[in-house]
Image 1 (cartoon, rainbow, N blue to C red):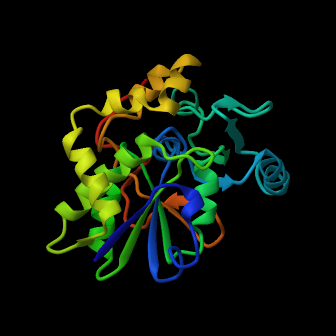
Image 2: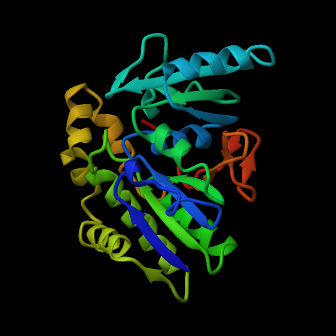
Length: 261
């Protein structure tokens, strides 16, 4: 298995992402953490969209079939008017049985850009171990591309750290793996800072911004490693669902532990 890493979503090109690749998208603050948290809290599905305008169009389309739909979205860390702020502390108690249409500045854009890949998973610190195990169990001799979403064409330290955690977990499950320098550097960064997750996220530019807005509690929450067994995957219809093989209970997907805000 070959493992590569892209520093930001703007690096996605056809040669990087096509039907020969398995993509794993990271937007640790906050889209892919929010996706994991929503699915662990019982959401039916997440629909990632490019912008609020597409979100409204999608909701109008879905309302002909169901009213169990929530709009969640932010632009530059602030909630969009008419949308729920896409923070775990706000969404977790509202999503059970619901479809979430999610619009974020970077993460949902990265997921959509990665769609040409053979499979697209989303991961964070919350569920990076589960995604790594699933890929190790179901894919062999594939090329895995970890995609850091970044922020408006800038590198983001928290995505790099989250990708390093995922790579650390993935190669722990395998006998052999070939890492590019970018993937190896993320792995080493995580392993050298693995006990500093809260500090890494809080000191990142996005973490500082969220803390300034009063959302430090969410930054701390999503810094927890491996507490969720959910494996979110983008399907051909553009919807993120639990990947086949996850464990469900009557109350929704199983979590390793319940770490509520």
